[in-house]
Length: 350
Image 1 (cartoon, rainbow, N blue to C red):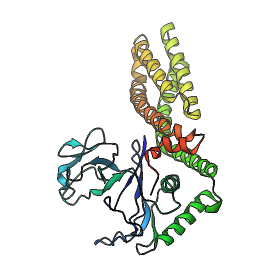
Image 2 (cartoon, rainbow, N blue to C red):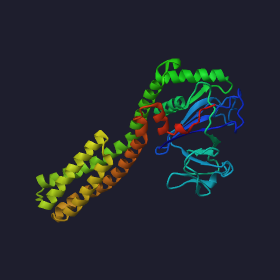
Image 3 (cartoon, rainbow, N blue to C red):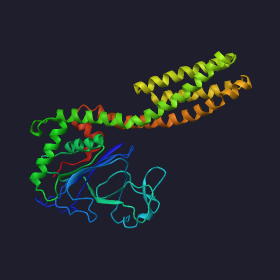
Image 4 (cartoon, rainbow, N blue to C red):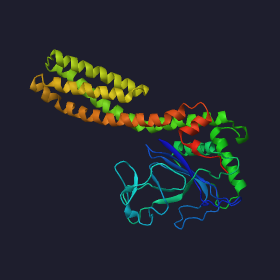
C-alpha cells in the first residue's frame, strides 16, 4: 500500500512569508521505501553536521513508520522502541498507528534493533491542509518522490536553508521540468499523469525484481527434480507405475505453467499453489517406486519442497507489490492517480 501525508512545521501558526512549508511524505508499506520531500526554509543545520538544513528529497530504502500523539512516545529513550512481527513501529510494546491522521505526529526509523544511540525521527504533526510553495501541488511532489525511489538516492539541497521562497519555487519548477522533460510552464495534467504512470511502472518492476529472481531460482530447483526423475527412468532402470507417471507428468506441467506465469507476471501465486499441490501428489506417488530410486531422489525431493515453500512466499510478495501499484498504473486521470496513493485526502494547499 502506498500512503502519503503532509506535516506542518509551523504547528498550526503558519504566517505568510515565513517559509514554513509543509513536508510531503510518500511511503510504500510493503517494501518500506520512504521519501520525505522537505520544503521548510530557514532550518538550522544539525549539530552532527550531517544535515545542512536545506530543502531536499530524502530517500530511505527501508523505513519503519508510525503515528501517534506527540507526547505518546519518547525518541530520547530509544531502548523503549521496537519493531513487532508485523513490521510495526512500537513504543513500550504497543504498536503506533500505521496510517496518518490529522494532528498525529510522525515517527520513523531505519533501525530494527534499538540501543541507547539509536535514532528515531520525530516529525511534525500531520496536516490535511498543507502549505506548499506557490504553484506547487501534491502531484508535483509525488513526481519528485518517485524520482528519488527510482534513483534510490536523496537529493540534498534543492535549495540552501537560507534561500528565499522565490528561489525554492524556481528550483522546484526546474527539477519538475527535468523529470517531465518539459518546461514547467508547459506541463499539463496529462503530462503529469503520463510521467507519474511511467514512474510507477518502473518502480513496480524494480520492486518486484528481487521476488521474481528468487522465485525463478526456486523453480530451477524443481527443474532439477524433474530432470533427476527423468534420469532415473532413462538411465537407472526406474519403471514408474501409472500413479507415479500421472503425478510426475502433472508436476512437469505445473512447473511449465509456473515458468510461464513468472515470465508474464500473470497468475503467479495461483501457479505456485498448483505446483505445490502437484508436488504433494508426487510425494505420495514416490512411495510406490523402488526404495533404491526413492533414496536416489531423496535430496532433490527435499530441496524442491523447500524451494516451493520459498516460491510461495515470493509469489505473495510479488502479487502484493503488483496490487498496490495497479490502481496508480491504470489511472485514467490525475484525480484517480492521487486517490490511489492517498493524495486525494489533501485539502487544497494554502
